[in-house]
Image (cartoon, rainbow, N blue to C red; front, top):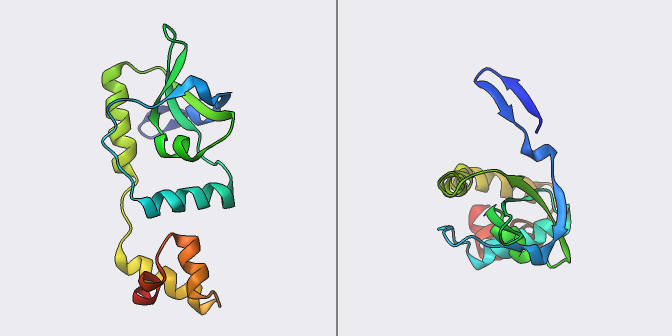
Length: 148
């Protein structure tokens, strides 16, 4: 494992050690409280198609079952319809895994309406049509119109 020294101490860099495994060896956990709206799942798929698979699925390895259980990235896993998938493997017990799942989910934050409005207006001023903005940002055209 690689580490980087920070003001708060040495921080592990599991991001530097992704591996590719058969998707059949990866499975969801049974405790993730996060649900994603259909339009956000469509946006996640659009993001993966447009930008590639930029964030590996975070897992732990269960050697008794020879399976990788998802800690973070379930929705990326659901969308990724390939034979193999990039993962990062943490060495966490169940309590730390459950906490990590919630930490990852909650740390993402939410979009503020005013900032989204500014972003939509800027794209519109750059010449993008409402339909293109809606597709790119995972919105309905009516929402784009309201934010402008």
